[in-house]
Length: 474
Image (cartoon, rainbow, N blue to C red; front, side):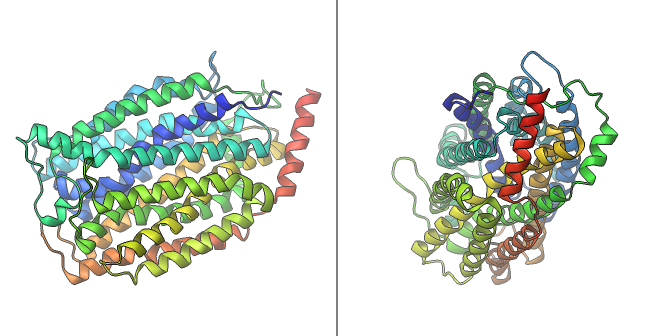
Protein backbone atom coordinates (compact mmCIF):
# COMPACT_ATOMS: atom_id res chain seq x y z
CA UNK A 1 0.00 0.00 0.00
CA UNK A 2 1.38 3.38 -1.04
CA UNK A 3 2.57 5.73 1.66
CA UNK A 4 0.90 9.05 2.28
CA UNK A 5 2.21 12.00 0.29
CA UNK A 6 2.76 15.64 1.13
CA UNK A 7 -0.42 16.39 -0.84
CA UNK A 8 -2.35 14.05 1.46
CA UNK A 9 -0.93 15.69 4.55
CA UNK A 10 -1.67 19.24 3.44
CA UNK A 11 -5.09 18.31 2.07
CA UNK A 12 -6.05 16.56 5.29
CA UNK A 13 -4.85 19.56 7.25
CA UNK A 14 -7.09 21.89 5.25
CA UNK A 15 -10.18 20.08 6.56
CA UNK A 16 -9.51 20.80 10.21
CA UNK A 17 -8.28 24.25 9.33
CA UNK A 18 -11.82 24.96 8.10
CA UNK A 19 -13.52 23.27 11.06
CA UNK A 20 -11.30 25.02 13.55
CA UNK A 21 -11.96 28.49 12.14
CA UNK A 22 -15.63 28.22 13.09
CA UNK A 23 -15.06 26.06 16.16
CA UNK A 24 -12.80 28.68 17.71
CA UNK A 25 -15.36 31.37 16.98
CA UNK A 26 -17.88 29.23 18.88
CA UNK A 27 -15.48 28.49 21.72
CA UNK A 28 -13.90 31.90 22.22
CA UNK A 29 -16.49 34.39 21.01
CA UNK A 30 -19.98 32.86 21.12
CA UNK A 31 -20.71 33.28 24.83
CA UNK A 32 -19.42 36.85 24.58
CA UNK A 33 -21.52 37.42 21.42
CA UNK A 34 -24.72 36.02 22.92
CA UNK A 35 -24.44 38.06 26.12
CA UNK A 36 -22.88 41.33 24.90
CA UNK A 37 -24.24 41.60 21.32
CA UNK A 38 -27.21 39.27 20.92
CA UNK A 39 -28.64 40.26 24.29
CA UNK A 40 -29.43 37.11 26.29
CA UNK A 41 -28.26 36.34 29.83
CA UNK A 42 -25.19 34.19 30.61
CA UNK A 43 -27.38 31.60 32.35
CA UNK A 44 -29.74 31.32 29.36
CA UNK A 45 -26.79 31.01 26.98
CA UNK A 46 -25.17 28.36 29.18
CA UNK A 47 -28.34 26.28 29.29
CA UNK A 48 -28.71 26.58 25.52
CA UNK A 49 -25.14 25.40 24.98
CA UNK A 50 -25.73 22.35 27.14
CA UNK A 51 -29.06 21.30 25.62
CA UNK A 52 -28.13 21.89 21.99
CA UNK A 53 -24.71 20.26 22.25
CA UNK A 54 -25.99 17.20 24.11
CA UNK A 55 -28.53 16.74 21.33
CA UNK A 56 -25.81 17.27 18.76
CA UNK A 57 -23.47 14.82 20.50
CA UNK A 58 -26.15 12.14 20.13
CA UNK A 59 -26.10 12.80 16.37
CA UNK A 60 -22.38 12.05 16.10
CA UNK A 61 -22.63 8.24 16.38
CA UNK A 62 -25.59 8.31 13.98
CA UNK A 63 -23.50 10.24 11.47
CA UNK A 64 -20.65 7.79 11.97
CA UNK A 65 -22.96 4.87 11.25
CA UNK A 66 -24.26 6.58 8.09
CA UNK A 67 -20.73 7.40 6.89
CA UNK A 68 -19.53 3.82 7.45
CA UNK A 69 -22.30 2.63 5.13
CA UNK A 70 -21.84 5.27 2.44
CA UNK A 71 -20.75 4.02 -0.98
CA UNK A 72 -19.68 6.47 -3.67
CA UNK A 73 -17.06 6.86 -6.37
CA UNK A 74 -15.22 9.20 -3.97
CA UNK A 75 -15.18 6.75 -1.06
CA UNK A 76 -17.11 6.61 2.20
CA UNK A 77 -16.04 9.75 4.00
CA UNK A 78 -14.69 12.26 1.45
CA UNK A 79 -18.04 13.05 -0.25
CA UNK A 80 -19.37 14.78 2.84
CA UNK A 81 -16.61 17.39 2.58
CA UNK A 82 -18.00 18.33 -0.83
CA UNK A 83 -21.71 18.10 -0.02
CA UNK A 84 -21.70 20.15 3.18
CA UNK A 85 -19.01 22.79 2.54
CA UNK A 86 -21.44 25.53 1.48
CA UNK A 87 -24.21 24.71 4.03
CA UNK A 88 -21.53 24.85 6.74
CA UNK A 89 -20.72 28.45 5.81
CA UNK A 90 -24.32 29.61 5.31
CA UNK A 91 -25.68 28.24 8.58
CA UNK A 92 -22.65 29.66 10.40
CA UNK A 93 -23.51 33.13 9.15
CA UNK A 94 -27.16 32.68 10.20
CA UNK A 95 -25.98 31.77 13.70
CA UNK A 96 -24.37 35.19 14.09
CA UNK A 97 -27.30 37.14 12.69
CA UNK A 98 -29.21 39.16 15.30
CA UNK A 99 -32.93 39.37 14.41
CA UNK A 100 -35.13 42.26 15.51
CA UNK A 101 -37.05 40.14 18.03
CA UNK A 102 -37.73 40.43 21.72
CA UNK A 103 -35.55 38.52 24.17
CA UNK A 104 -37.73 35.37 24.00
CA UNK A 105 -37.76 35.48 20.20
CA UNK A 106 -33.99 35.95 20.03
CA UNK A 107 -33.47 33.04 22.42
CA UNK A 108 -35.67 30.80 20.26
CA UNK A 109 -33.75 31.92 17.16
CA UNK A 110 -30.46 31.14 18.93
CA UNK A 111 -31.66 27.63 19.80
CA UNK A 112 -32.75 26.92 16.22
CA UNK A 113 -29.71 28.31 14.40
CA UNK A 114 -27.12 26.96 16.81
CA UNK A 115 -28.73 23.49 16.70
CA UNK A 116 -28.65 23.57 12.89
CA UNK A 117 -25.03 24.75 12.96
CA UNK A 118 -23.94 21.88 15.15
CA UNK A 119 -25.82 19.35 12.98
CA UNK A 120 -24.12 20.63 9.82
CA UNK A 121 -20.80 20.63 11.67
CA UNK A 122 -21.40 16.96 12.54
CA UNK A 123 -22.30 16.08 8.96
CA UNK A 124 -18.94 17.32 7.68
CA UNK A 125 -16.63 16.82 10.66
CA UNK A 126 -17.39 13.21 11.61
CA UNK A 127 -16.61 11.89 8.10
CA UNK A 128 -13.57 14.18 7.99
CA UNK A 129 -12.23 12.80 11.26
CA UNK A 130 -12.86 9.25 10.01
CA UNK A 131 -10.56 9.88 7.04
CA UNK A 132 -7.59 9.51 9.39
CA UNK A 133 -8.44 5.83 9.86
CA UNK A 134 -8.54 5.05 6.13
CA UNK A 135 -5.75 7.19 4.67
CA UNK A 136 -2.99 4.97 6.09
CA UNK A 137 -2.79 1.71 8.09
CA UNK A 138 0.53 2.65 9.72
CA UNK A 139 0.47 4.10 13.28
CA UNK A 140 3.45 6.41 12.72
CA UNK A 141 1.95 7.82 9.51
CA UNK A 142 -1.27 8.42 11.42
CA UNK A 143 0.68 10.32 14.06
CA UNK A 144 2.07 12.50 11.25
CA UNK A 145 -1.36 13.01 9.66
CA UNK A 146 -2.83 13.84 13.04
CA UNK A 147 -0.07 16.37 13.66
CA UNK A 148 -0.66 17.97 10.27
CA UNK A 149 -4.34 18.07 11.07
CA UNK A 150 -3.86 19.83 14.37
CA UNK A 151 -1.14 22.13 13.05
CA UNK A 152 -3.45 23.34 10.28
CA UNK A 153 -6.30 23.55 12.80
CA UNK A 154 -4.28 25.96 14.89
CA UNK A 155 -3.28 27.88 11.74
CA UNK A 156 -7.01 28.24 11.06
CA UNK A 157 -7.62 29.41 14.60
CA UNK A 158 -4.73 31.85 14.30
CA UNK A 159 -6.21 33.30 11.11
CA UNK A 160 -9.60 33.60 12.81
CA UNK A 161 -8.16 35.45 15.79
CA UNK A 162 -6.06 37.60 13.47
CA UNK A 163 -9.00 38.59 11.27
CA UNK A 164 -12.22 38.42 13.27
CA UNK A 165 -11.84 41.40 15.60
CA UNK A 166 -10.48 43.73 12.86
CA UNK A 167 -13.22 42.55 10.49
CA UNK A 168 -15.98 43.10 13.05
CA UNK A 169 -14.61 46.55 13.85
CA UNK A 170 -14.19 47.36 10.14
CA UNK A 171 -17.71 46.33 9.11
CA UNK A 172 -19.11 48.05 12.20
CA UNK A 173 -17.57 51.27 10.96
CA UNK A 174 -19.13 50.78 7.52
CA UNK A 175 -22.63 49.68 8.53
CA UNK A 176 -23.03 51.77 11.69
CA UNK A 177 -22.27 55.23 10.37
CA UNK A 178 -18.58 55.10 11.20
CA UNK A 179 -19.14 54.21 14.85
CA UNK A 180 -17.98 50.90 16.29
CA UNK A 181 -20.68 50.00 18.79
CA UNK A 182 -19.09 49.88 22.20
CA UNK A 183 -20.49 50.63 25.62
CA UNK A 184 -17.40 51.39 27.68
CA UNK A 185 -13.64 51.76 27.64
CA UNK A 186 -13.39 48.08 28.53
CA UNK A 187 -15.34 47.17 25.40
CA UNK A 188 -13.08 49.41 23.33
CA UNK A 189 -10.22 47.17 24.41
CA UNK A 190 -12.11 44.08 23.26
CA UNK A 191 -14.37 44.01 20.18
CA UNK A 192 -17.31 45.92 18.71
CA UNK A 193 -20.87 45.14 19.77
CA UNK A 194 -22.31 45.90 16.32
CA UNK A 195 -24.63 43.06 15.13
CA UNK A 196 -24.06 43.93 11.47
CA UNK A 197 -20.31 43.96 12.01
CA UNK A 198 -20.44 40.45 13.46
CA UNK A 199 -22.55 38.85 10.74
CA UNK A 200 -20.48 40.41 7.94
CA UNK A 201 -17.20 39.31 9.52
CA UNK A 202 -18.43 35.73 9.99
CA UNK A 203 -19.55 35.68 6.33
CA UNK A 204 -15.95 36.32 5.27
CA UNK A 205 -14.66 33.52 7.51
CA UNK A 206 -17.41 31.18 6.24
CA UNK A 207 -16.39 31.67 2.60
CA UNK A 208 -12.80 30.72 3.48
CA UNK A 209 -14.04 27.59 5.29
CA UNK A 210 -16.09 26.40 2.30
CA UNK A 211 -13.06 26.70 0.02
CA UNK A 212 -10.82 24.78 2.44
CA UNK A 213 -13.30 21.89 2.73
CA UNK A 214 -13.38 21.61 -1.06
CA UNK A 215 -9.57 21.51 -1.21
CA UNK A 216 -9.52 18.80 1.46
CA UNK A 217 -11.92 16.75 -0.66
CA UNK A 218 -9.79 17.18 -3.77
CA UNK A 219 -6.37 16.46 -2.25
CA UNK A 220 -7.04 13.39 -0.07
CA UNK A 221 -7.57 9.71 -0.84
CA UNK A 222 -9.04 6.73 1.03
CA UNK A 223 -6.61 3.77 0.95
CA UNK A 224 -7.44 1.38 3.80
CA UNK A 225 -10.12 -1.17 3.01
CA UNK A 226 -11.81 -3.32 5.68
CA UNK A 227 -10.66 -6.95 5.89
CA UNK A 228 -14.26 -8.00 5.27
CA UNK A 229 -15.26 -5.38 2.71
CA UNK A 230 -18.47 -7.16 1.72
CA UNK A 231 -19.58 -8.20 5.18
CA UNK A 232 -23.22 -7.48 5.97
CA UNK A 233 -23.04 -4.54 8.35
CA UNK A 234 -25.17 -4.73 11.50
CA UNK A 235 -25.66 -1.45 13.34
CA UNK A 236 -26.65 -3.31 16.47
CA UNK A 237 -23.48 -5.39 16.35
CA UNK A 238 -21.28 -2.33 15.75
CA UNK A 239 -22.79 -0.61 18.78
CA UNK A 240 -22.41 -3.75 20.90
CA UNK A 241 -18.76 -4.07 19.87
CA UNK A 242 -18.14 -0.43 20.77
CA UNK A 243 -19.79 -0.82 24.17
CA UNK A 244 -17.41 -3.71 24.93
CA UNK A 245 -14.30 -1.79 23.86
CA UNK A 246 -12.65 -0.83 27.16
CA UNK A 247 -9.84 1.32 25.67
CA UNK A 248 -12.53 3.38 23.94
CA UNK A 249 -14.31 4.07 27.23
CA UNK A 250 -11.08 5.12 28.92
CA UNK A 251 -10.02 7.41 26.07
CA UNK A 252 -13.50 8.93 25.94
CA UNK A 253 -13.34 9.85 29.62
CA UNK A 254 -9.81 11.21 29.52
CA UNK A 255 -10.44 13.10 26.29
CA UNK A 256 -13.62 14.61 27.69
CA UNK A 257 -11.68 16.00 30.66
CA UNK A 258 -8.96 17.42 28.39
CA UNK A 259 -11.53 19.15 26.20
CA UNK A 260 -13.36 20.47 29.25
CA UNK A 261 -10.06 22.11 30.23
CA UNK A 262 -9.88 23.91 26.88
CA UNK A 263 -13.58 24.81 26.82
CA UNK A 264 -13.62 26.55 30.20
CA UNK A 265 -10.47 28.58 29.51
CA UNK A 266 -11.63 29.57 26.05
CA UNK A 267 -15.14 30.58 27.10
CA UNK A 268 -14.02 33.21 29.61
CA UNK A 269 -10.87 34.61 27.98
CA UNK A 270 -12.60 37.67 26.51
CA UNK A 271 -14.39 38.34 29.80
CA UNK A 272 -11.03 38.16 31.61
CA UNK A 273 -9.59 40.97 29.50
CA UNK A 274 -12.74 43.06 29.16
CA UNK A 275 -13.61 43.01 32.87
CA UNK A 276 -10.41 42.20 34.81
CA UNK A 277 -7.39 43.35 32.82
CA UNK A 278 -9.19 46.34 31.20
CA UNK A 279 -6.24 47.64 29.18
CA UNK A 280 -7.50 49.74 26.25
CA UNK A 281 -4.39 49.51 24.07
CA UNK A 282 -4.85 48.45 20.44
CA UNK A 283 -2.09 47.89 17.89
CA UNK A 284 -1.63 50.22 14.93
CA UNK A 285 -3.02 49.24 11.52
CA UNK A 286 -5.01 46.07 12.36
CA UNK A 287 -6.16 47.36 15.74
CA UNK A 288 -5.64 44.16 17.74
CA UNK A 289 -6.67 44.46 21.37
CA UNK A 290 -4.66 42.89 24.20
CA UNK A 291 -7.27 40.10 24.27
CA UNK A 292 -6.71 39.38 20.58
CA UNK A 293 -2.93 39.36 21.09
CA UNK A 294 -3.46 36.87 23.93
CA UNK A 295 -5.46 34.59 21.62
CA UNK A 296 -2.90 34.89 18.82
CA UNK A 297 -0.02 34.10 21.17
CA UNK A 298 -1.92 31.03 22.36
CA UNK A 299 -2.52 29.75 18.83
CA UNK A 300 1.14 30.22 17.88
CA UNK A 301 2.14 28.25 20.98
CA UNK A 302 -0.45 25.57 20.12
CA UNK A 303 1.34 25.09 16.79
CA UNK A 304 4.63 24.57 18.61
CA UNK A 305 2.96 21.87 20.71
CA UNK A 306 1.55 20.19 17.62
CA UNK A 307 4.97 20.21 15.95
CA UNK A 308 6.39 18.40 18.98
CA UNK A 309 3.61 15.81 19.20
CA UNK A 310 4.67 13.35 16.49
CA UNK A 311 8.44 13.18 17.19
CA UNK A 312 8.06 12.99 20.98
CA UNK A 313 5.18 10.52 20.99
CA UNK A 314 6.95 8.31 18.43
CA UNK A 315 9.95 8.25 20.74
CA UNK A 316 8.40 8.06 24.22
CA UNK A 317 4.89 6.78 23.51
CA UNK A 318 1.55 8.55 23.32
CA UNK A 319 0.34 7.62 26.79
CA UNK A 320 3.39 8.87 28.71
CA UNK A 321 3.69 12.13 26.82
CA UNK A 322 -0.05 12.81 27.07
CA UNK A 323 0.08 12.42 30.84
CA UNK A 324 3.19 14.62 31.13
CA UNK A 325 1.61 17.42 29.07
CA UNK A 326 -1.66 17.37 31.02
CA UNK A 327 0.17 17.40 34.35
CA UNK A 328 2.20 20.44 33.28
CA UNK A 329 -0.96 22.21 32.06
CA UNK A 330 -2.63 21.63 35.44
CA UNK A 331 0.26 23.18 37.36
CA UNK A 332 0.57 26.17 35.03
CA UNK A 333 -3.18 26.82 35.03
CA UNK A 334 -3.25 26.98 38.82
CA UNK A 335 -0.61 29.75 38.74
CA UNK A 336 -2.87 31.84 36.50
CA UNK A 337 -5.11 32.69 39.45
CA UNK A 338 -2.36 34.70 41.15
CA UNK A 339 -1.75 37.11 38.28
CA UNK A 340 -2.61 40.80 38.59
CA UNK A 341 -4.10 42.88 35.72
CA UNK A 342 -0.85 44.78 35.11
CA UNK A 343 1.26 41.60 34.78
CA UNK A 344 0.72 41.33 31.03
CA UNK A 345 4.10 39.73 30.36
CA UNK A 346 3.42 36.93 32.85
CA UNK A 347 -0.11 36.48 31.51
CA UNK A 348 1.27 36.03 28.00
CA UNK A 349 4.09 33.76 29.18
CA UNK A 350 1.72 31.41 30.98
CA UNK A 351 -0.58 31.43 27.96
CA UNK A 352 2.35 30.30 25.82
CA UNK A 353 3.32 27.42 28.12
CA UNK A 354 -0.24 26.21 28.69
CA UNK A 355 -1.01 26.40 24.97
CA UNK A 356 2.05 24.33 24.08
CA UNK A 357 0.73 21.60 26.37
CA UNK A 358 -2.76 21.81 24.87
CA UNK A 359 -1.41 21.79 21.32
CA UNK A 360 0.65 18.72 22.12
CA UNK A 361 -2.28 16.72 23.55
CA UNK A 362 -4.96 17.17 20.88
CA UNK A 363 -3.25 15.36 17.95
CA UNK A 364 -2.45 12.48 20.29
CA UNK A 365 -6.14 12.01 21.05
CA UNK A 366 -7.08 11.72 17.37
CA UNK A 367 -4.23 9.33 16.66
CA UNK A 368 -5.22 7.14 19.62
CA UNK A 369 -8.78 6.86 18.28
CA UNK A 370 -7.30 5.46 15.04
CA UNK A 371 -5.47 2.86 17.18
CA UNK A 372 -8.78 1.95 18.81
CA UNK A 373 -10.31 1.37 15.35
CA UNK A 374 -7.57 -1.19 14.66
CA UNK A 375 -7.99 -2.76 18.10
CA UNK A 376 -11.70 -3.27 17.52
CA UNK A 377 -11.22 -4.63 13.99
CA UNK A 378 -8.73 -7.19 15.28
CA UNK A 379 -11.15 -8.30 18.02
CA UNK A 380 -14.39 -8.30 16.02
CA UNK A 381 -13.40 -8.46 12.32
CA UNK A 382 -15.47 -5.28 11.77
CA UNK A 383 -13.90 -1.90 10.94
CA UNK A 384 -16.35 0.72 12.26
CA UNK A 385 -14.12 3.72 11.53
CA UNK A 386 -16.88 6.32 11.28
CA UNK A 387 -18.64 5.14 14.42
CA UNK A 388 -15.49 5.21 16.55
CA UNK A 389 -14.27 8.57 15.22
CA UNK A 390 -17.75 9.98 15.74
CA UNK A 391 -17.32 9.13 19.40
CA UNK A 392 -14.23 11.33 19.48
CA UNK A 393 -16.26 14.16 17.98
CA UNK A 394 -18.98 13.39 20.52
CA UNK A 395 -16.53 13.69 23.42
CA UNK A 396 -15.25 16.96 21.93
CA UNK A 397 -18.74 18.39 21.79
CA UNK A 398 -19.65 17.10 25.24
CA UNK A 399 -16.52 18.73 26.63
CA UNK A 400 -17.41 22.02 24.99
CA UNK A 401 -21.07 21.63 26.00
CA UNK A 402 -20.34 21.18 29.68
CA UNK A 403 -17.49 23.70 29.59
CA UNK A 404 -19.52 26.45 27.94
CA UNK A 405 -22.63 25.68 30.01
CA UNK A 406 -20.62 25.63 33.22
CA UNK A 407 -18.98 28.93 32.27
CA UNK A 408 -22.34 30.59 31.63
CA UNK A 409 -23.88 29.25 34.84
CA UNK A 410 -20.87 30.21 36.94
CA UNK A 411 -20.84 33.73 35.51
CA UNK A 412 -24.50 34.06 36.55
CA UNK A 413 -23.83 32.46 39.95
CA UNK A 414 -20.98 34.86 40.67
CA UNK A 415 -23.27 37.77 39.76
CA UNK A 416 -22.00 38.70 36.31
CA UNK A 417 -24.16 41.46 34.76
CA UNK A 418 -23.82 41.66 30.98
CA UNK A 419 -25.27 45.20 30.97
CA UNK A 420 -22.83 46.64 33.53
CA UNK A 421 -19.79 48.68 32.52
CA UNK A 422 -17.90 47.53 35.64
CA UNK A 423 -18.37 44.10 37.20
CA UNK A 424 -18.56 43.29 40.91
CA UNK A 425 -15.67 41.79 42.85
CA UNK A 426 -17.53 38.48 43.03
CA UNK A 427 -17.97 38.35 39.24
CA UNK A 428 -14.28 39.11 38.67
CA UNK A 429 -13.31 36.39 41.14
CA UNK A 430 -15.44 33.91 39.18
CA UNK A 431 -13.81 34.85 35.87
CA UNK A 432 -10.33 34.39 37.37
CA UNK A 433 -11.33 31.04 38.86
CA UNK A 434 -12.56 29.79 35.49
CA UNK A 435 -9.26 30.66 33.85
CA UNK A 436 -7.16 28.89 36.47
CA UNK A 437 -8.30 26.36 39.07
CA UNK A 438 -11.22 24.82 37.19
CA UNK A 439 -9.12 24.02 34.10
CA UNK A 440 -6.40 22.65 36.39
CA UNK A 441 -8.85 20.17 37.92
CA UNK A 442 -9.94 19.06 34.44
CA UNK A 443 -6.30 18.38 33.51
CA UNK A 444 -5.79 16.19 36.57
CA UNK A 445 -8.92 14.20 35.71
CA UNK A 446 -7.52 13.64 32.20
CA UNK A 447 -4.26 12.31 33.70
CA UNK A 448 -6.14 10.02 36.06
CA UNK A 449 -8.13 8.49 33.22
CA UNK A 450 -5.09 7.94 31.02
CA UNK A 451 -3.36 5.95 33.77
CA UNK A 452 -5.73 3.05 32.95
CA UNK A 453 -5.37 3.18 29.13
CA UNK A 454 -4.14 -0.29 28.01
CA UNK A 455 -2.91 0.23 24.40
CA UNK A 456 0.85 0.62 24.70
CA UNK A 457 3.04 1.51 21.72
CA UNK A 458 4.17 -2.11 21.50
CA UNK A 459 0.62 -3.42 21.47
CA UNK A 460 -0.47 -0.89 18.82
CA UNK A 461 2.38 -2.01 16.57
CA UNK A 462 1.47 -5.68 17.01
CA UNK A 463 -2.17 -4.97 16.10
CA UNK A 464 -1.18 -3.06 12.95
CA UNK A 465 1.11 -5.85 11.79
CA UNK A 466 -1.52 -8.53 12.31
CA UNK A 467 -4.15 -6.57 10.40
CA UNK A 468 -1.71 -5.99 7.53
CA UNK A 469 -1.11 -9.74 7.39
CA UNK A 470 -4.86 -10.39 7.22
CA UNK A 471 -5.31 -7.88 4.38
CA UNK A 472 -2.41 -9.44 2.48
CA UNK A 473 -3.99 -12.88 2.91
CA UNK A 474 -7.31 -11.61 1.57
